[in-house]
Image 1 (tube, rainbow, N blue to C red):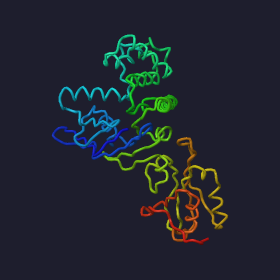
Image 2 (image 1 turned 180 degrees about the vertical axis):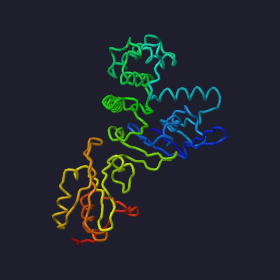
Image 3 (image 1 turned 90 degrees about the horizontal axis):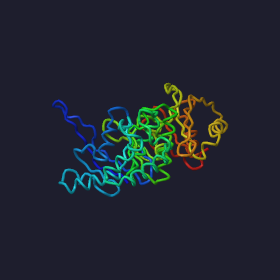
Image 4 (image 1 turned 135 degrees about the horizontal axis):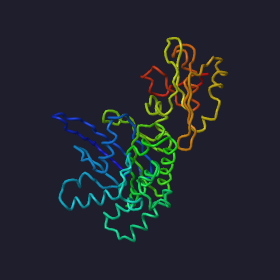
Length: 348
């Protein structure tokens, strides 16, 4: 549904050039919720604003629903009209709501329909329908100043849906909200994704957002995508920074005469007593240094940091046992340990 290829954005400021996006390739499948996460300055906002061409990319292409939007930019009145039509099929939700204070809630939702030239009757019908969808049917005549932050964001979401978009872009839509309101807005976005078949691309700096509703995710650093994939794929990727950030377990990893292992449980493996089975099978003392467990995509996922006595070379067989159980194993402090450990057939 959304593809960026070699997307680059360079800003000029006081005689200097600042590269906000550096050859970003992104692939968002139809009907999924895709999260882009990163610290401030990673390029997230520039990316999402380039997807609907609020910012014109310096280089690269943006394709939405099979249409190359970058090919429509700056090529005469006809291309401009086609770009506006394409943008009308892309909804945008902003961090600070961007509602017009002088308009009622209903009038704010009607604004995109007014720009599209819809009749007053059609605008009113559609706006009330959308307000009902986001749970604000009783607030149609209120003004933004009379609403809570969560209600304002619901109005922003209703307005973004006015043009029946195929894609919804969310620019830090929950970062100005309290935790409970954040959960309700995220649940609303997930419900709309399922009910309307919307493809949702959201940017955030909060791991809990990715954990709560995202099917896929990408990690950005210094204008580049350094990791991407479905959340389940990332959890199963050795050394994944995103997986470690989603499930931080802590625990001291120092010491030459011990082996520290991060064990990721997901699916059926999350319900089996694998660690205690390991201790009994090999008669070894295992220390649990930290653990975290949560639900991602309806599946229970956990991560545990354990300590095995002795050096890595002394623990090849026990580690192989864990991998044979279908667990994701990362050896802490061994960056070259990128492939599953092979255990010879018949080894006990």
